[in-house]
Length: 400
Image (cartoon, rainbow, N blue to C red):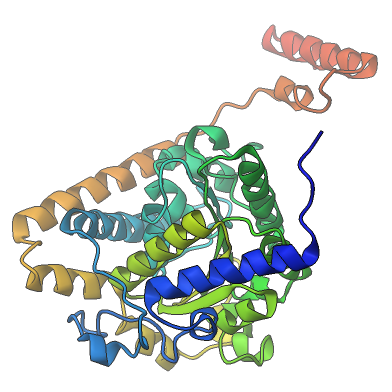
């Protein structure tokens, strides 16, 4: 027999107890724990200088320790590689080597933090814009990019890396993420799931359904919203009247937090804390990272029609890569030799992408029939044999 379902009152009492325990770890009340801090979490100023705790405005008990030096350096290496990958892929699109590329230039701190904030046993559910996250997680860049060239598969086995296929339909991956987290909880597995989406996705019905299910069934999911200001051309002000997207969390019965998404140190620190809380308390959390998409939505988008150049210039001054470089240099962790080594590694990745994407793929037409049904029908066998015969005659110089 399966385990009995707790009575609603008992279940709610257990949830309140977990929220109370989590809030005590911060030294604050449950009400303070549920609501985002009055100001977004920030550790570096726009120039990259470490700011004091009193200036962070994080409120009582919201302490986020600075990550270890080796983690900071790894994060910077991811930033440099991510920027180079974004710019290289954007160039490949203009050359006609890629069909499309949704760039995350300017959002690399969110991308790298998402991957480094997870344990090896955890799962990531990315969107179509999260290429750098998937690569930072360990997936071969060449495997990640094949889908943008137009190949029929996602390029990698999700189970090998615990990274779902990058989702193009808006927000559907959040439901899948919650399902995986629920299954892991039922099995007693030590798994946290990171469900990634953008600000536009929060206007979808799937967003509501995913958060509501996660909160009611208390599953360990961290909803990571990269708020880059626009759902293609629609600004956030036309989508939500809430003080922040992080405030939406309390309506579902989970804690929400808002972080400066261009502050690599703060993004990594808050994501690690969110994953830890989700793991320890088996409860979902919502983390909104405020960032900016520096380039167009994709190569099919003309961003000059809905935002002006001055707005873009303002965000350039908050570049996460420059801020992190200044911070690490001031901290004595980054010198010229280390910078050269990191840049050289990023160039190797870019070179391998150029080489792979400028090589014409050799497709096998017979693959069309391989994944239509689990057991091919007689008609499918007949069609496949007919095409194979035509291909053979064409190779022999006959008329297909």
